[in-house]
Image 1 (cartoon, helix red, strand yellow):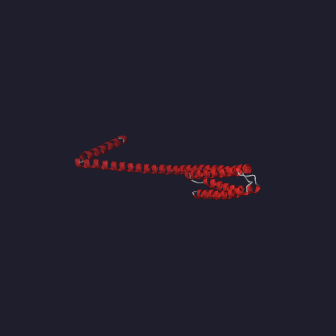
Image 2: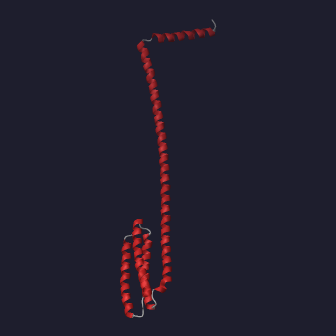
Image 3: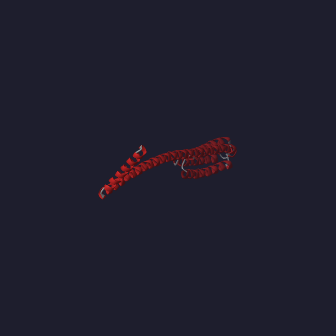
Length: 208
């Protein structure tokens, strides 16, 4: 008998022995083997599912962390942008208020000739009007930083003060300075009226 044939016979015998062993198992043993195989498969399935869940959780956490970082950067950019916009608007309002105050000074200079013909009365009256105008301008500049509703209320009050101021200026222009008694009486009334208007401006300023 040659070597190749001997190997073939050995394999056949071993195979037959294995099959025989399987055939010799009892039904209970075969059932137990099936249960063990399923248990082993379940364990591997559970391990695979657990590993997949862990990886999924890691990926989701990474995504959420990156998304939170992006949102934080976005919120920061939006906040900075809004702050810059608010600052620009505030600068514009203050610039406009200062420009108007300067324009008012120019207008006052141009209108000084209509206050009165008498030099002494003109000087006195101009000081009174200028003092009131300065308080109006200061309050208007401060009002630019106030809340819109407060600013509107203060502006309305200042407009009323200016109307009364303009009426005084008109009276100066029409005043007959030839009568000293008339001038003195007029100055007393204007003095009282200017002080009353300044008090009104002070009350408006306290609203800011």
